Length: 325
View 1 (spheres, helix red, strand yellow):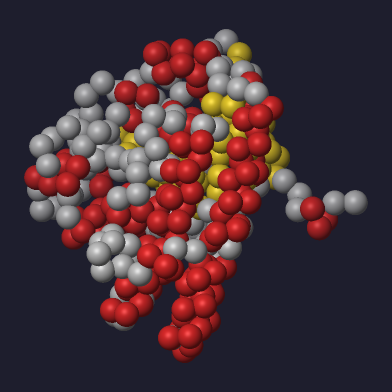
View 2 (cartoon, rainbow, N blue to C red):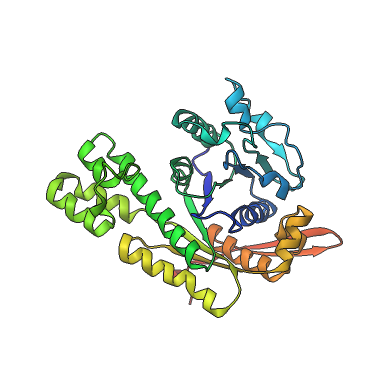
């Protein structure tokens, strides 16, 4: 992987929120803008991203990691029919593929980091299991998707908290007493009183003052992004801001709210057609929502126009506010 490669991980605490659908159109949009993009399905055991690209039976995928010792990267990179976009399939429904151990996860992470591309998009499995969290934490831009429903919002909070505490845990893995405060994978041995970062900072200052600054740096440098999907009303629009405030209060983390995507039959129709919704109808409202999200992610203003079955892209670099009159 080159030093300029941007890894964007798209995760979420709850299943069925449209994460894979959004991730696929994000990848398509960035590829059509001229970037070399690789879309990676890391939802082992329940991978279905290939279907959203119109690929029925991928010849290769991460199941090869479980069946072979030597992986040829060129073998795993599948054509999508979209310019500049390659795809790596997940493990399908092979028995045991969802229960891979940490060594295999580390091997896949190492493989991903060696890929040559401008942008690598990781579609993560739902939930707060450590496999998904560790993929999220290798990203240069971590995007968390939620829907406006309270169950999804709370799961999203748990996902962001788990990602942060996992980062802290791995940074202090040589210190068992610190692990008790930040590793809550085993509640019987964990210090659940350190649930918020405010309490965690206080305990560090009291018990591990030499590491307090390290902790502060880890928290301050954690800046996840947020997208609210399936917005249907003005009330739904408040979910993003409400979640930002919740995260700021309990985790002291600043979330970058990228935007929202409205609920639309056009998105569902694109899933049935196995075509990313940005390509099927780039002028639709959800597609325009997505274009705004891409604009924020890559600092480039993109406009997609479909004519005679072809998509034309106009792009213009965004000007930082400090240069605006």
